[in-house]
Length: 192
Image 1 (cartoon, rainbow, N blue to C red):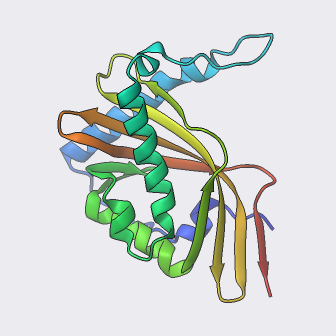
Image 2 (cartoon, rainbow, N blue to C red):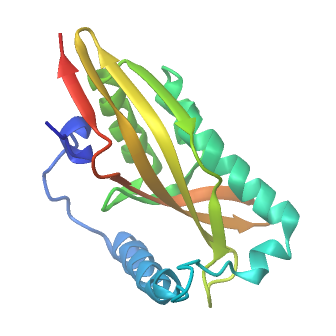
Image 3 (cartoon, rainbow, N blue to C red):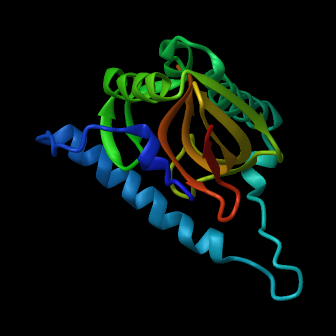
């Protein structure tokens, strides 16, 4: 029986009061996501190949740093300390559909770790990177990875496509948005 991502996160479902700063963060993330739609729809009829943004390709050091941060964020999920994964997140992050502070996002990571104490992650494809138009230093990174979760006799495995919005500036590189979608037909849950 397929299980959705939200089924195994057990996030707090209460609607928090959103401050003006958090609302602006949500609004910015929404604008960023909607600005990505034309890029995602830009496929050629013949080969259905997505066009890479030349701005990332022209900056190999930035592309390398972005790829490193996103890959490290994914694989850090194998560690038992949620702060190891949390160190890649910004002070405010749009985390799985919710505006969160850094500490709130780390608590959500800890909830996943409590539910699934044994986790393995392996990138299956290269990262797809491009700069978001009209937003200097903001990039979108998409990665497909295999995951395996265990909790005693329970086992959950499959593939997921994670999308991160990453900010890169003079202060460093940090993830300011995270969302993912389980790939259809890949999820396998069983209990012994």
